[in-house]
Every structure is written in C-alpha cells, then in structure tokens.
Amino acid sequence: MSTDLFWQALEKAQPQLKQLEARDAMEAINTLLQPHFPHLAAELQGKAEGEAGQYDLIITAHGATEHFQDVMALTRSAPALSLFADVIAFRARAELGDLTMSMDNFSLSPADILVGHYADAGRIGLQLWFGKLIPQDMLDHAKHMSFILLDHAIGEYDFAIKIGPVEFMEGKPEQTTVSLAIFPPVLDSFWCDELKHTALFPIGENEWTGFELVSNTDPDDKLLVQRNESAMTLVGRADMLWRLQVEVALDNKDDLEIAREFEDQLETLLTQTQEGISSQITLHGNVRSMNWHVSDVGIAVAKAHTLARTFAPLQFDISSEFDPQWQDYLRWVA
Image (cartoon, rainbow, N blue to C red; front, side, top):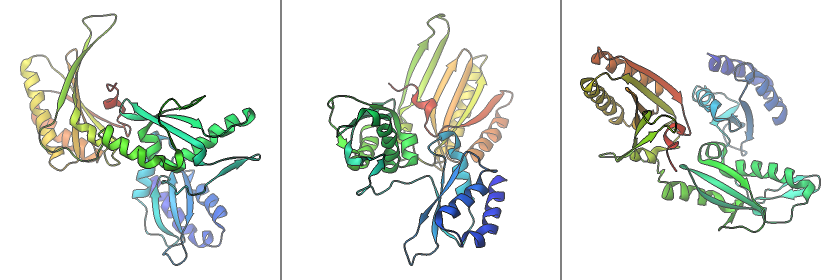
C-alpha cells in the first residue's frame, strides 16, 4: 500500500531530517509524500521545549474533500516515529491572537473581517464584510487573505464540511455580524443548536418524512423520497463519512415486503453498534434505493453482502461512496 511505502521511506529518512531546519525538513517530507499521495501535503508544527518529539506532523488536503479519505488513511496508519510526537489529520484551528497578514504594505487581521451567517441546506453560509477601508487595488488580495484567515480560524475540516457558500458583501452589514476573531464559537453553537448537528447518535424510534417529486416533462416520472430526520444529528461527524447504498428492483408487492425486511435487518446490524444509520430511501420506477451513512465502510459493505445472500432470489446492488458532506442526504434540505 502507498501508506506503508511512504511511512517506510519517512522512517528511513529520519536521521537526515533531524539535521535539517524545519522548512527544509518539511520540503524533504513532501518530496517523499508526492509520489504516493500527490494531492496531499505535509506541514510541520514545532513542539514546545521539553515535550516529547520534535514536531507534530500535519497531513492536509488543502480543503479538497475528495482527498480527505487519503488524509485519514495516511494518518491512521502512521507508525511511532522518533521525530514526530503526533501525526495529525488536517490543519486544526489556530489561536488567532494578534495574527495579522501583510502584503505589499497592506495588512489584514481577523478583527478586520465581519462575519454574518445563515442556514444553507444543512450547512452554514457566510457573508463577509471588511471592517476597514480596503484600497481598490488590494481588494482581490484582501479576499484571498480572508480565506486564509478563515481556514486558520475554523480549521480545515470544519471549513470544508460545515461551510457552504461564502460571499463578500459591499456596503454596511445587513445582518448581525461578529468579527472573525470571535466567530468560531458562534459557528459551533449554530451548527449544534440551530442546525441540530449534535453528533449524538439518536436513540429510540427515528423520525421520518416523505415527499414526492414529479418530472416537469413527464408526469409519470416520479421519485418518492423518505428521509430519516433523526440522522440530521450525525451530519458532519468525523466518523460517519461514507454512504452505503443498496438498490433492488421490485416486481411485485411480495418483493417490496422482502426488501423492507432486508432493510430492517441491516439497520439493526448497523445501529446496534452505532456504526451506521439509515439516512433515506427512494423509489424511482420499480427501483428501491436504501441508503445508510456508516463509519467503517468495509465492515458495512461486508454485512450488507452477507445479509443479501439470505434474501435470494432478490438481487441487491450494493455500492458505497465517500460522502463526508452528506451531499446525497442534504440535497433535499431547503
């Protein structure tokens, strides 16, 4: 595996890396990383004097969610290395303090960025205003610097998973704002209290809603959707990033009853250990699609295949997709 090859190369290079300054060591580590994970990068964070290890090694995908699974696979497989105290997935939130970014005699700090927020299809949309006058020729630079400061304030994972559209606004703020310097706890409260993404696994009977979508061009082309509203609590949770999908063609009512029994049994297998939850069910034509969000996709797929074999002669099409933003589930949210 590429993870093993990288860690073996890094372990072998440790004696040389220990002789280098941090910047040079980071460049050397990235040279080792690129052949195996070209879309990832390594960053070094110094440790306080007296702490075990010289650095924390941070693995980042620069916010690209399609590569988050590689970040997780790499960090989870990390061996104990003498040069690194910890191997960390994603850039964490930073203590902003008096952090200021400067470029061409222009400076911008978190206190100069005013943030308004709103619910956007299960995620958080942001509207940004500048709290000080920005020269016209520096406006594009200021926007770029704002994204960097947002990444520092919110952290790479939360920025990618929890934040929806980000708009730069003109004029005076049209809603209540706070400075970016104090925005992170506001974001956390809104995510949990208003959007109900508490990260707590729901206990008891789940709450379901259902609706029907009809094609604009063909009134007979209908999609029936059932959504598990109780699954909303787990959106964005860092161990519920995979979607398991099971599709089956139904030719009669007996097939439907069999499919429902399969669904109930798989739901029991996944929820009793809190390793998965049913998120939604759709019916398009005679095809029933059952979806779960799961933590360990390998185990969940294996359980689905094992169970499906006991429900012959129905043919179940079992697949999975890395979906850390729960896009398939949230697409129905207004």
